[in-house]
Image (cartoon, rainbow over all chains, first blue to last red; front, side):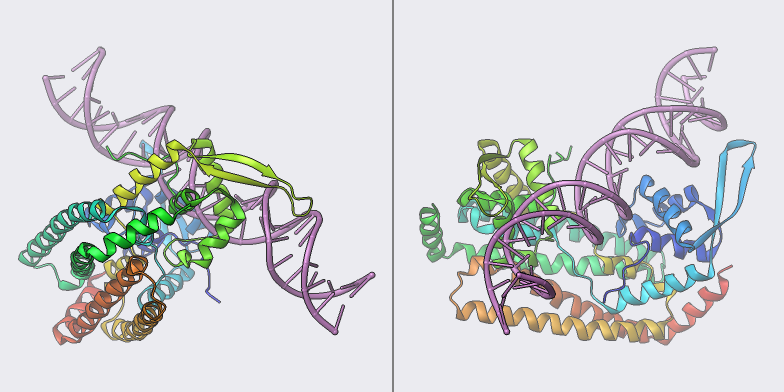
Length: 198
Length: 198
DNA sequence: GGGGTCATGTAATAGGTTACATGATTCT
DNA sequence: AGAATCATGTAACCTATTACATGACCCC
């Protein structure tokens, strides 16, 4: 039922978006992604980028426009988006925005196995996490402040605000969790569980 | 500086935890994971499980204990956790709890490219997301209610509470975002951007 | 007792990351 | 000019997912 995309790496989506503006070669794509800080929200690495462009090409979403050799620099292929690529771009964006994607955050895994740690240790570790989360929140707030000063239109800040929302939510959650762990009843339960384990 | 784990798939962590309780064979591991609903927080599929167990074996974190052939059923290898495996388990759990891992949620990608959609369309799509998020929140609340009724110790509910926190945060965020999109100034800005694009 | 389906594993394929390679540029 | 660094790509290597395979069990 869930239509699988021919190319599913989110990098590909960014590539399509950038090629909407104008044709360019792969390296240039990478440069812009980094320049615009898109690599904060999209996992970026050069190897994957080349792979993804090739996949897009095979899938017919982009096409070679020409191969430039300006005597120096190895020859670079310039890509442009195709009609099918445009369709795919919009279809993909719509799906991403309209339907939540099931994710598996690493912290969720840890929580689902939390019982293996003693309450004391868990508390200590969570305290450290809390500190780092605080820094992250502060950093993101900084990015936002700076952007506002620079008159960046707010649409381009949605991702950072989202990031901040999530971090703040996690801070509240962890704070509560630490509170819960203090309950001496849990300490006892944990001891019993531990012993009852074969 | 970031120590890479020999086996990094989160499934492996669950395997180690389960083998702490008692030795068992791969299929049994899978069965329990599902039974306990761990597959809600850990991406699970059989193929990966076998792969992961093999990796753990190569890495010395688990070892074969014996190979049982009870005349029927193909022979199944029983694994047990090793000393090194125990160490790895605790080290890994500590890291997961204490330091936030950088994730790349799909919705963040969409947000970082939101500007390609018209404000009107974005609003409509976000509305649909909001509806689904509401259902998800409700479902998770249901799971929690049921678990509380069944006297499940709360440690085992941390993951669900976390999930709920995140969903609720996202609901607030999206609600705000929809509000922002209504600003007629943005409509104008968007039009201008669109035209100025080569 | 033959057709479905559950239990169990393996192999083929596709996807992604790291490591390497090579020419140009810049610095001293 | 040689060393260090940047620009650019490719290839080798892991990881993960899907598809396939096989025997047992269950039901009319």
